[in-house]
Image (cartoon, rainbow, N blue to C red; front, side, top):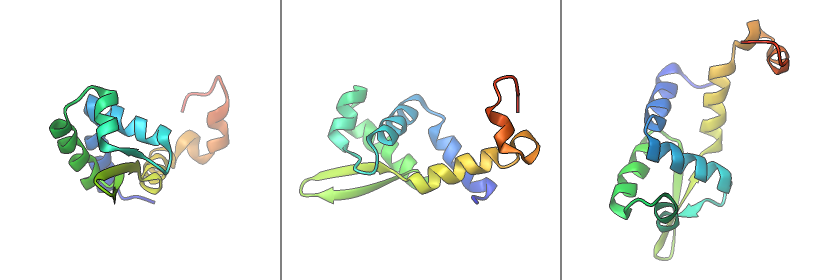
Length: 107
């Protein structure tokens, strides 16, 4: 389980529209990730600006990078993402997560 300081850092990194969009795109791509240039192109953001956002997401542990030739590929760190979601939902519905699936139940 993640510590609250780690969750705060991750949520702060996601609290910006471009970073949130990039992260959601990487989550949708799966473990293979996507080349930095492709992400910048899809989000209509300059490469320099995207580099700044990648640095913030990386420092929060939300993404990982790998070099392949002259390209850098980024992918979501699913372990951190799942840890963050687990932290946020740990006490959902009084400790009964199954109850959260009920349509009339508000956690």
